[in-house]
Each structure stands twice: as C-alpha cells, then as structure tokens.
Length: 256
Ligand code: F6R
Image 1 (cartoon, rainbow, N blue to C red):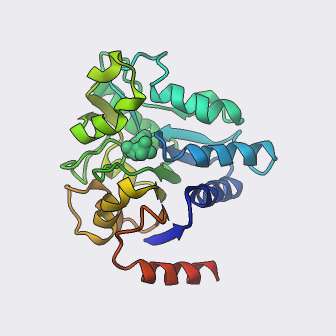
Image 2: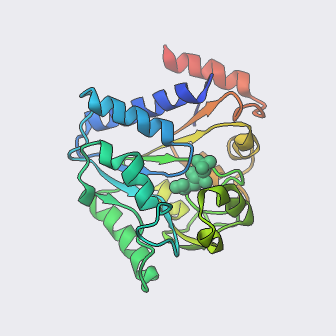
C-alpha cells in the first residue's frame, strides 16, 4: 500500500484529483467508482476546476457510486444521486446516463443489487475506485462484520454511522437505517483504489486498517490484500500510525 501523508485536506484533495485526472487522461473511457460524504467534496471541487480549465474531459467516462440510502425519496436532497449531481456531475461533461448510483427506490432491491454487479462487469470493471473511511472502519456501507467476500446488497447501518450522518439527514429521514452498498469483494475487484481519510475522528480507523490485522471488525483492513491501493491522509488522520516516519520516507522515494 502507498501511504501518503499531507499537511492538510487541501493538499490531499489536490493529489486525489491529480490521480483521477491522470487516469482519465490515459484512458478516455475510464470507469470510476465514486463515494459521497464530506471527504471527497474538495476532491470533486478540484476535478470541476480542472475540467473548467480544460485539463480533463469526462465525456467518455462512466461511474458507479458505492452506495445509496434505502428509503430516501428519489428527489430528496439527501439521496446520494442528488449529492453526486449537485457536487460533481452537473459541473462536468460526464453524460448523466453513464453515471450509476444504486437505485433504492424499487420493490425489487435484491434484483437491483444483482443488476448493479452485472452492470459493473459489462463496463469492464472499475478502473479507479475512490473511497472514504467511516469512523468505524467501514468502506462503502460495509459495516464491521461485513464479509470480505460480500457483493452489492442491502445492508443495515451501524449505530455509529447513523450518528455520524444524522446531521446530514432531515427529521423525516432520521428513521433511515439501511442502504444498498457495493460489497467488499466488489470494491476489491477495482483495478486501483484511492482511499482518503481526513481529520482526527478517522485516526483510530486508519491505524486499524493499515497496521491492524485483517479483520471483518475493520472492513477497510481488506485493502491490505489489494495490490494497488493509495491512502491519502492529512496529519490528523495519520496521527496514530506507529510507523508514520517510515511511510513518510517511502513517500519521499515515490516523489523521486
Ligand atoms: C459514502 C461512503 C462512506 C463514506 C464514509 C465517510 O459513499 O461510502 O463509506 O465514505 O462514511 O463519510 P464522510 O466522508 O462523510 O466522513
């Protein structure tokens, strides 16, 4: 794993956006895996800026989002579809029909999950998956106890996740306690993975994921098994890493 530690969230976003732009510039038909939440917001702003400056073209790119709340009304400002449209898609030249977010507004959700997996396969698989990290170590909404062999499915949300995200949901939506999420095996099939963690609240999950044992108790520890993962951390998120000095030395080598 490449563990890259930067001074602040701004620099992390700069590097994440650079990796994404580089990937698209070397393969116009890149298939992106995308995340929602607070973590990727600055990265999306940088991507929008790069697009406006003419340095990246999304016209042939397609994307798959990691997850969607179950029971959020399609038009809700809190649906992840709305989040993606507002924070990225409507500001770049990606074709909306080439963007996929799991559709939770269906009475056949299990079928939807199966189709999502098929759709990813039909596109040739995800080239670059962007991830955020839950304070409990989740990736996507694969909460602690999720199998490393899991696929896209309906999941229950952990109480810590509900608490972390409660300020993002309206009063009516506080009853939401399930989601559709890509599985861990689905995520691990991505050719490349970039995971961002920002702030002190993520420090414990970061240390368990990078330096802890492979364990379903920390779903992000599964990334240790993937051959092409980059962790992008700010100082606070990296503060509990016991081998921080070693990672920084390795980072200097990568910059040479
Ligand atoms: C979002 C997702 C989640 C978030 C994680 C961190 O699509 O899959 O795993 O990345 O909960 O959320 P934030 O970025 O809000 O701290």
